[in-house]
Amino acid sequence: PLYGGRSIDENNIFMPQCFYFDIVNGFSDYMSPKEQKERMYGLITAGLATHFPEYLEDDERGKRFAIIEQAIIYAGNAHVGRHRKGTHMPYIAHPMETMMITAHLTDDIETIAAAALHDVVEDTEYTYEDIRLAFGEKVARLVGEESEDKREGQDKSLTWRIRKEETINGTRSKSLEAKKIMLADKLSNLRASRRDYRKIGLQMWDKFNMKDPSQQKWYYTSVLQVLEDLKDTPEYREAEEIVREIFKEVI
Image (cartoon, rainbow, N blue to C red):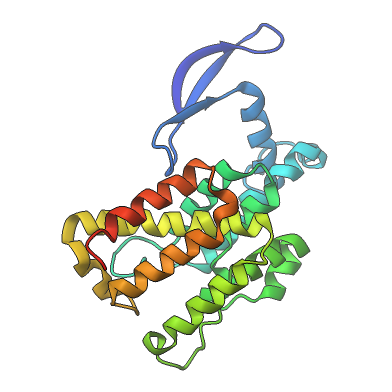
């Protein structure tokens, strides 16, 4: 956060005004004093600000925001030591970006928390039951809906098509909340692919299990089709624009 001047709260008292940076928008609007207070309640309830009085932990606003703070910590621990494919970027950057994009699509706290955790079951040693015990049925269900059967022990390049077909077919019956997480997930991946495309063109696919750009085009085009419930959102339109750009050379 950065100091951005002062504002007047509901009691006509001058309060500091903060600006916050995030992965999605670069420079976002400031948080009001009320929003900052709710954020702090969340930090307290999540156990991240233990020097504050314990009685505040019973505040419902804290309970509402704490699940997101706890999900961030959980995901960070689960993905520790992992990196984005073909880069030195810590893997946690992807679920955090996915979470922040999801927060632009919904105000539902459990959906946002599930977005932070969406790759934990699929890519780490943690299980669906671990998520259920830590975060409850709804978050676990949403994470489960985002988890792909990796077919461990088999050549990922050979199972790629069937895995993606299962993802696409399964998405048709997903809840709207799960579709929002999926859109956020794919948009985060597409942004990374666009950055690579602008540097090295179609060679960017060499680091993936599926190196054929025509297959990648089929996949992302199909994903957009099954996510058409969200076609009126800025995030969907951004994903469409990126797909057009990075696959413009692909038949």
